Amino acid sequence: MALILNIETATRNCSVAVARDGQVLACREIAEQGYTHAEKLHVFIEEVMQEAGVALTELEAIAVSKGPGSYTGLRIGVSAAKGLCYALQKPMLAVDTLAVLAHAVSVESGLIIPMIDARRMEVYAAVFNAAHEEVRGVEAEILTDESFGDFEGPIYFVGDSAEKAKTVLTDARFQFLETVQFPSAKVMAKLAEMHFNSDQFVDVAYFEPFYLKDFMITK
Image: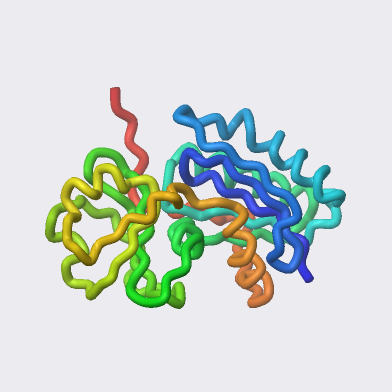
């Protein structure tokens, strides 16, 4: 049974959980309008370790959300994970952010489409079936009334883009599960455990988050 620290900072939700064998022992998370990951992340790490009653040296791996998502959020999470891996000499796992969102819900049939807001009418999205198997990979796309029209329903949307998506995605097949807005380290824990058991580790030195789009600075 692996003891893994999970770090999810790809969106406004700064989320940390420590889990054993995929079962969460402690979790801290907060989704604020202003990104406070730099202030909150290391505090949350310390708090979950204390609550779980385990030391950092007992960890067997560090898991981090690899994106897509916020450039700044991903950089903060990955930098923290790398620092811990180097200091503790532990391996690192990288978990797909949209897969974490998709696994937050269960449906009997149809498709799950997790979406992360990319400003204006653009989103980062992927498509999963009811068994949480990827049907279509991650894409950055502009939402229109024709988006996802080629997929057969029912189709369930999760993520933080529901408000703007509902203005154009009006097909009767589309359902918005608005209770799930952000990826969480609590959900990430099971995926990280699966990665650990199948030796899906990443190179700590050379790993880079999956930004999907180049970082741009605007006035």
